[in-house]
Length: 70
Image (cartoon, rainbow, N blue to C red; front, top):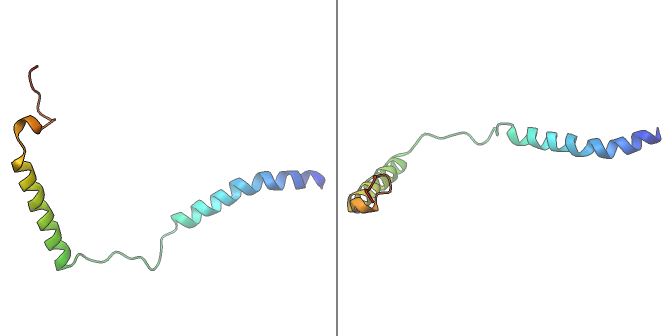
């Protein structure tokens, strides 16, 4: 019986960690995804245009993907 008192604290940590992981992995019932609204689509289009403008402003030497002869 006294050996059981030594084993319980050693098992409490992994069992507690497993329970915490299980609770965190469970799907949340209240957090359902909502369909994209018109404002979301407009923001996405605005951001894509901004990215295109920034890419157009870059000079070829700014592009690290291109190989330059040294």
